[in-house]
Length: 362
Image (cartoon, rainbow, N blue to C red; front, side):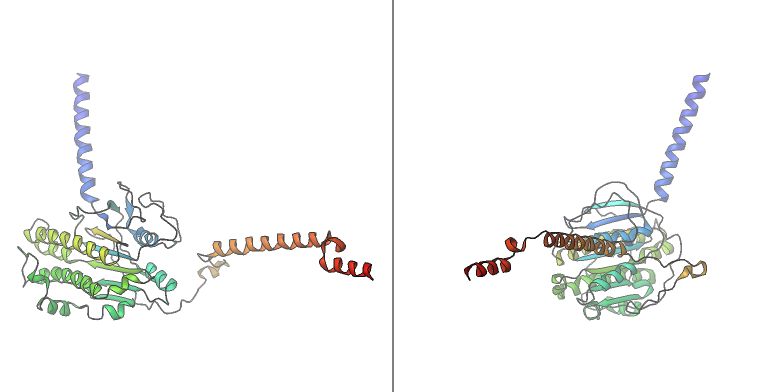
């Protein structure tokens, strides 16, 4: 009797554990995929989850920049000190938890999918390479949100930004409507045109980069951040099991695969291309308009409690440089003073030696 009870409990536990695993996989299916990366940017294959709020720090580390807090994530190994990729391209796809991207470097599960921006990385690029005018492009076609900096203003001035411009671009020669299989997607539906307009933007970006190949030869790294939400609208309108959604998912996967290969080749196999797939963000993203060139006003938020200002990120570096330079100079002064104090003027100094010989000759 007891053996039967134990077997029943074991079967119930097995079914419960299997259901829990399936439920966990279904809910936490968002992913962070590295499509392309040079050899000196080493991504290790594994199932280490990466938090959504740490994506900007991860991008900064791949570009060779320092971050305020250490990123305790084993998926990215430390690379050479004097080698950095020439560009980083991050594509955020909303409305799908994963895409079939077989030719990828590595893929990791994404946890805590909160909205994030690449503003901190853009400010770092601008502050370190202001004279070289790097390309900084942040684009979200569905929200008509565009931010360009440096050479991007001249290179992507012809890039369609608003939905009206992109739809007009779809009716022109060389659009994706004539080269891609639409299958169940319609050219007249609003949601379908929104998705196709985002695909058109990806195509136009690679076309403009091929026209301006000199961008990949300068010494300043470029930053691209794209956010695509066409799949989210298709899922909301037709459902995730609809043929329109399945065809759009397969089409976007092939387009992103080719987009990553083209950008990687244009930058001389020295660029990092990442794709973040998020079914839905946990919180809405609020953005404030600002100019990256405007001066920041330092405010002491702790003045109410008479607290000191926060130290700068480079404080430890400057402190060590000044400290050890002072120690070396102090040791040098002590050594010189000791040698001068114990010097024999008649033997060690050539001036006194010549004087003594002249007195003897006289």
